[in-house]
Image 1 (cartoon, rainbow, N blue to C red):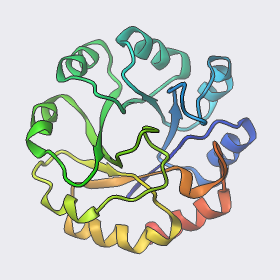
Image 2: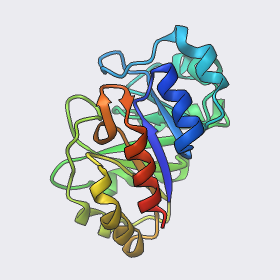
Image 3: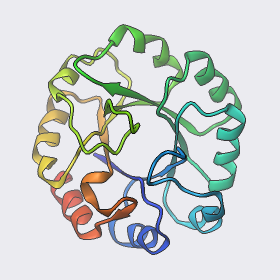
Image 4: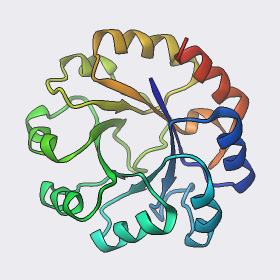
Length: 208
């Protein structure tokens, strides 16, 4: 079960993450309206961290996204807006990093609308629909994922806390396409500042 810790930006906090929790992925938010927005001037020390990095973008221009890959040493792009299949294809042709497409979940999931993206993304990520584009601290109905119709793997996000570990393991047993989880606000001391002890306990419980 992979773990992505998203929305982290404090230098000491990031270094602690890399040495104590050691998640599979670290998420950097490049959405200016987010309280966890990462500034360009932080790129040098972030790039040097020994973690795989995911850049979270919302309806960004392809040239800007490609520049972020180079500047921050990204291993994946997480598309959190209304990006089209054509844009995804353009990115896949222009870069070798993974492309993740976020599906914002409300009362239902439009499986048919996702179908066109399947050949062109490396994984999906399901998050709770919100105006803030993530980090809402709210959970959607995971029961919707039991109808997941594709072989393509996906990540689970949306209001996850340490208390969800057992339920996540149960969901993975019923839905083997679940690759891992994306955690954010449920493990924060303040926006962008993560609780290392809580993350360590969650990782131990999730992977036991």
